[in-house]
Length: 474
Ligand code: ADP
Ligand code: ZN
Ligand code: MG
Image (tube, rainbow, N blue to C red):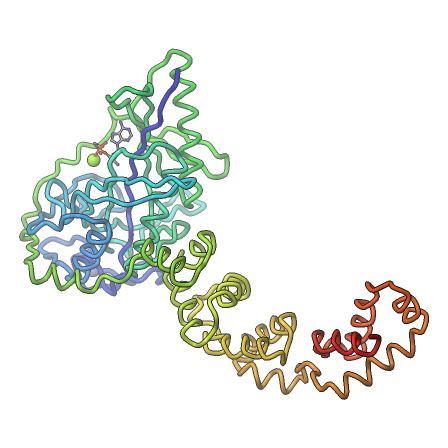
């Protein structure tokens, strides 16, 4: 049977606020266990939540960027369930009246563009963290309790694992540009659950879906969906039916394993949280947040191609994260031409950021220094080859490229007089080759240039040497 995949994503993003969503505790990741807790996030009796304004603003930014309607009024609800990571016995979330609704995101797969509708973007608090140690014990860490999340839910508009990957990446790029989330799936600051079903192609009615959780990388989502689709097709081809169920992706075995069936699923008994008044966003507040929206990744990508003549591939790499895009544009502002700026950022700069695990803005090779370095190449003071070495030296020493070139004597010998002497010596030392050259073996030119380069320890200006050899043997 020709079965069409149908996929919808639920994406949780940890917001980069200083404090938690309903209390003043720090929302920092990686602090020692149980150092950020208070009566509110521990859910002690009588403690009252107070909504963090920054959280609402970050969620609104995401809402605007995803082309959503921002609701004037939204409601916080209690989602009740018992689990040791939830001291209150309920999670505060938004249910039937979310902050943002009815948006869309554009995706591109294999040159085809389409839109995926966004159902909603709502606010919620995260649960605490359980650490399962080697013994039978589980340890509880309150630090993550009450850290702010947005949940982004898509409509079931996605038709392949590749589209799901593209959709997740498009949303990730947007959140990165908004600087509301650091978007690392590996550390869990971005999490994605994927809902998936199949239906006979051409049929409108949706099939029964399963939900896949626990993917800890962007490609993992694509892989998990491919696996789950294959499994569903096999079940249907064998005459079976799909049961609504949650699966956990195991990245080590590349398989999904069932977690729980719908029958055992929780009844969350949602109801409005009586401790929190409705969230009201008036027009003034909404417009103020809209006015601080930065340039978004899709726009920047397009602009890079049009303004700087980049290929689509290079445009994509250089606009992938906001920090890289900004570094690249700062290079141009510092006087580097777009082409070499693109080459060097995609090459040496990205390599250095990966090696040091830092943002480009933290490199010692600043855009100004890179521009100075490339000026030296342009002027012929150093070759591109030597420039790479100087790049590393600048990065290591935190000093100016010119200083390093001078100090290490890396400047190319462009002094024609000195070079001419060296070339003459090379020709005298190789009379046999000279004879053959004069006899018509013109490709020996490269041999003479190579010998001269060697004699100058690589510091001769190859263009200049070429010219001199040509002149002397002409
Ligand atoms: P639930 O009631 O299980 O939470 P929702 O209707 O709220 O389901 O949808 C949750 C997510 O699942 C959304 O991203 C939605 O697009 C997706 N979804 C819903 N139905 C299907 C289906 N039949 N196949 C694939 N995805 C679906
Ligand atoms: Zn707290
Ligand atoms: Mg739902």
